[in-house]
Length: 243
Image (cartoon, rainbow, N blue to C red):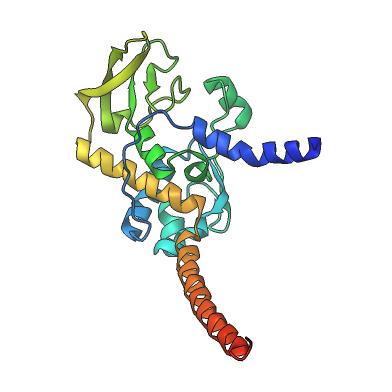
């Protein structure tokens, strides 16, 4: 019995994590994994703004060919330093020093879209939800990731947002809305599109075979449906003379 309880507890852990991930409204990223241009822009923005701290250690540069880039384009535009196109997308930031700088080593982002509740919606909302908070080490906080230890590296593009804090009947404070108080180099629409492109790219990275899996899944369901019809007809034929 104890072994059975332990097995059931382990099986329910993912469900517990999923349930605890809710509570914050996530904006719809409305991504399209068939949009190769969005995937290419997302890859460009990731290597320019994110890879300095975050790795994609389970994803190779050459896999960007899946959404229309040639090896030459990858080598010339998306690889910095002496990395090779067949290598994994690691970061050059040393783990020990980064832990001292940020309090924690910046996490690998390969599976973020699969691990976070909401997936692409979580990534998109996270990227658009930084706001000024002078109590934090880097002067910013985040609606979907409270007390985040990461600086807002895209603040120059998005601008500066301030939070409108409200208090409910129980005295609990929450962020009611965010107001842009200092515009960035991008308009609100341009920055939202950039965040959407990054969410699209990271969703692809988390499961590069997702579209292929879905395509195969449809054919499997068609096969099972045809097989079921044939099985029923065969059963009727075998048992038609049995009373």
